[in-house]
Structures are given as C-alpha cells and as structure tokens.
Image 1 (spheres, rainbow, N blue to C red):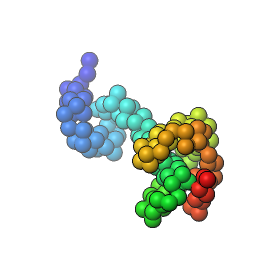
Image 2 (cartoon, rainbow, N blue to C red; image 1 turned 90 degrees about the vertical axis):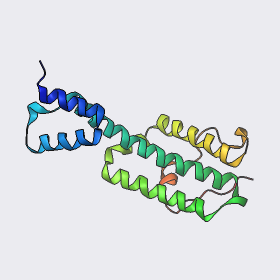
Image 3 (cartoon, one colour; image 1 turned 120 degrees about the horizontal axis):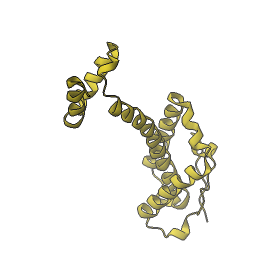
Amino acid sequence: MQSRELQMLQTLYEQDYYAWVKQTAELLQSHQWEALDLDNLIEEVVDLGKSQQRALQSALRLVLSHLLKWKYQPERRTQSWQVTITRERLNIDELLQESPSLRRFLDDAQWINSTYQRARREAMVETGLLEENFAIACPFSVDEILDLDFYPHADK
C-alpha cells in the first residue's frame, strides 16, 4: 500500500513537474528514501541519458548539414554557416568532455549514418538540390566532422 505522501508526490509529477523536481531533490538531500517516487525518478534519470544523446545527435546533424551545404553550394557560403559549424563542433566537444561515454556513438557507423541521413535530407530541403547531388554515405570522417579547421572542398 502506498503512503499518502508518495501518492501526493506522484500526483505532483503529473500536475507540476517543476514542483515535483524540487520536492524530489529535497527528499534526496534529506535522505528520505522511503518517500521517493522511485518509478518516476528512474524514468527521469533514464531520460537524462537520452537527452544527452539527443543533444549530441542534434549538434552532429547541424554540423553535417552545414558541411554538406558548404561542399555542394560553394557559391552560397556564408559566415553564418561557418559560425553554425564552429558553434556546434564546440557543443559536441563540451558534451564529450562532460560525458566521455557519449563518444561511443561517434564510433558507431550505423548511428553516424542515421544522423547523416537526417542531415542530408535537411541539406536537400535547404539548398533545393536533388537527392542525387549528395553522397549516399557520409563523406566526412569523424575526425573531419570534429576538426575546427576542416571545411570540405567543393564538388565539381
């Protein structure tokens, strides 16, 4: 049977997430383990890991889509593209410094390809170029993607 406090905390999770977070943090800090809403707490901890992965994938997708635009539309290159590429490379670097275990995703060819396919689609829409203009597989190595000084040459 659940305690009244636990039921209230579970209800709070549904109705006021921020208040639930504050209350949960207080319970953790005061070592009131029995009062914790463990089911929702576990779900949130799992989601934190997923959030880090999504942040990495989002930054990588932005780098890739802008590198593709840089490569396939050299006549339209802008400083804005360069700023986006640099900012997102730095975001990736920060994520990897905070969570080195995320590096395993960059070593996963299938994960990189999945991200590249999204970036490729995004670049097609933004440039108006046809699908056949873009490489089917990612034309950049992970080292190139992360290299602050790497910019691809134009395809002729």
